[in-house]
Image 1 (cartoon, rainbow, N blue to C red):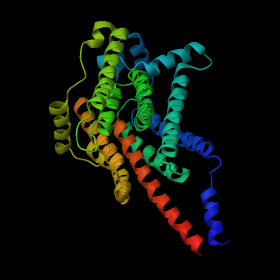
Image 2 (cartoon, one colour):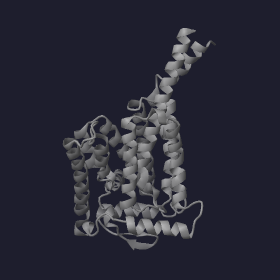
Image 3 (spheres, helix red, strand yellow):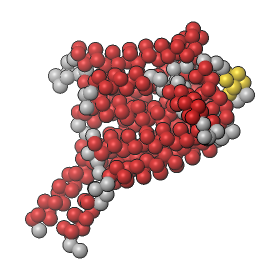
Image 4 (cartoon, rainbow, N blue to C red):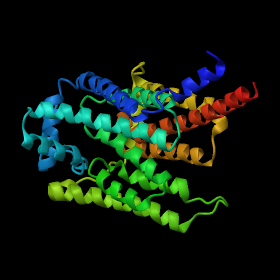
Length: 354
């Protein structure tokens, strides 16, 4: 086989059925990550408590965690998964615990598929580069399972933020606003859609701030958090508003850092965070010559969102960094796709001249 024939054969691999391959990849990564999530540490032991927590959130009531009566007002807007779980329970056919596992798997498949579609459609990556990006995303996601209980909002968080990136880069503001409203019923990270829009578009090429784009960005965040508060009140009344989003930068963050310094070990959250991000950043660094204004802004957005997550979340629970993980993995795929396209063009020119 000649070099030209080999090149044509390789370029046509999976080209006719990329979304069939993408579905197979999504199913594989979803099964792998949900298996680890369901089995890691005490998650298997606490599964029934997690299911009862979802029912409690839907009813606006307290629930048992580790055998103790617990209630988190901040969780009262996270009704998307509980609502779907209640609908599934009313359909019947499976036990509630079985429906829970099926829905976890279903949301994982959807999340990976949408991320892969984003890579193909927006990053213009081939299926091979896309599969590596999805694999790296799955690897990083494993470290977000360092919490002792399943958090059913995590795969939805991945899915929604992928959609935020897609719609933001497509500048489809009205649809993005609609998705933000829905995402607010999953997790309050929906406010970061406005942060992403601001960093992508608020600063013009002349380094001036666009008032129109800034207003759009702020409206996204304001609508998101207003929806969050509205849902908390709707499903739990005044007790759902008893405590706002925790501002933990000087409290919880420093406490977690202090705990790590007193008792360092290879499985502490700073070490896991380093491992979670290092391969993504190394891939980005390897293709840094292909960075442009858009990808740099995406990286800045990921860093700002990571910082915001540290301020308003519990930093030792690495799941709060899922939005940033999605952004960084996507940027890595964009840069690799550019490098690959340049390499293919160079090979094709060589073959034409041969």
